[in-house]
Length: 377
Image 1 (cartoon, rainbow, N blue to C red):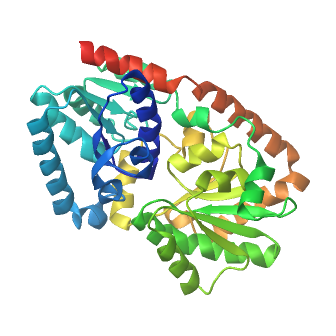
Image 2 (image 1 turned 90 degrees about the horizontal axis):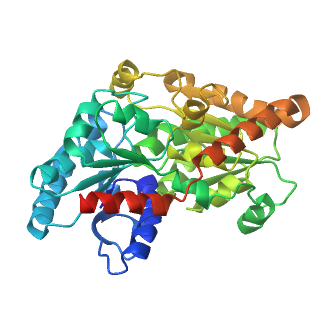
């Protein structure tokens, strides 16, 4: 198995639980993180080795190391001949690895369909060549893949079963030392070093602007593994943020506790939607990466909640639009909504509840059934 970042590590950990229930003697190894290791996974490399951001210099500077890891991993896997390889997301790394393994007779499954419905549709031909089966987490994906001759199964989104339909905000606040009466904004600037570099300064500047208007607001940042000190340093560099709390991990607790979240586009936005939280989605990257990304976009939305709802149910502020001033204004509109636009909040809660219900499946069992069929084919 290979998971290339924190979100993939989380998904893989949930999948491993189902696999081990079916095959108690299962041994799993490859590239992964703490969630996978908690299920007995042997990580030959830590998952953060593959965490890169966008195109351009972020990738080019790490290209040789990442290609070297993939080459070593493929040689090791071909020497040991696993019964199955499962790539968890990270398509830029995993699809080429899966192609090499499949060509040598190793069965391959890819968990999480690459976002061919959002951008880079040319990947469909590559997926068909590289993968025996795709485990899809969104209900519309199997039909798209079938039209291109790719076998797949909709397994639901594992997080929809982990995150409660009605999160306990009071308990989450107690865990973080927050009062029930506090107004809380969660800042989630990403789980990759490059995301933190691009977004954390903007988020903290936005927080300072919010604090000038609402001085009693509490800000909480759940720092991804290994990024706590970097985030603290960035907050210090901009002059600090009043009533700021930076915690190690605990992103789900923070999302359950908050009133609004300012959040980087990515898997975390879906987690925020499952927690039924209003959000402002933001993203910023290097100019070259942005130009390439824009040309490959197929939809007007970038954030997963908007893509799945097929409309802008929450604001997206991307690249130059993600200025601290604009981010602060968008967050303040959500904070003002209970008094000024309560129906907006009610409508959002309804849409996110419907979304949550549509993603709930017995993911571990369905995925394991699909994997068993691949092994028996």
